[in-house]
Length: 90
Image (cartoon, rainbow, N blue to C red; front, side):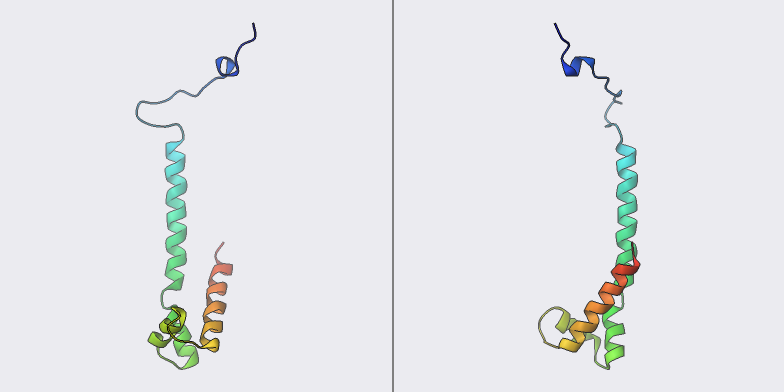
């Protein structure tokens, strides 16, 4: 009679209370968190930079970004700045 697949498979030993590879998962998660925080820091001051470039207030840039006001020029510069940030971070 042929052996079932699971009978012939070798399984890694499991430690009590921990799954195999949990340290690798934690390390990958930590690297992902660090990457996201680094990207977030690049966004800090974005509205202020756009406002200064265009000669408007940061609060107005925020209103445009949140859809409460309309300005094609501000929206265009915001999109360019965000694309520049994301293209530089990989």
